[in-house]
Image (cartoon, rainbow, N blue to C red; front, side):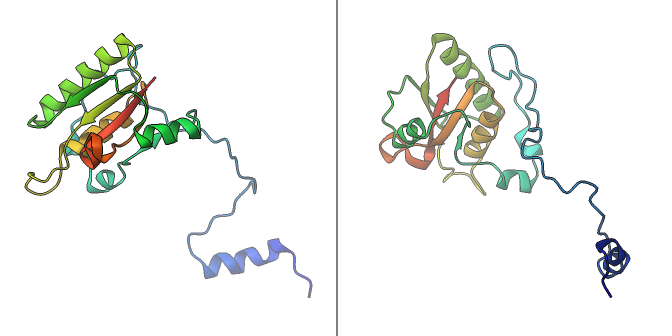
Length: 170
């Protein structure tokens, strides 16, 4: 009457199609992270990806805020609160998608070369766009690909609210 677990396997497999036996019952908490795109030595990716080629699902997965795992909680809070001194500001109002990408590349290259840590990128909320905002998700998607960007989050209302983002650089 006493069955081993291996005796139940064929019965279970018949009841639940598509189930495969695990050969190792351990979970690896240190599995490899997904590789980032290749970037230049200064940390700026020179080419802009075609944002329109992203699927609807990828548009939904774009995060409003991101903090690198090496940034301490206290610094994260200070970035969110907007109390760090802002070194420079880029306003993308009126830019097309392509020209905004070029302006972003130039702005970040200059900011990193000068040694800026905290910048604000004003992308707008997309109220005048016909269907959905274009520059905001494009900017956040592009920032997610940059090795030199350690954090970003929506700005405080005094700095533009959800129409702007605080960006913390390496």
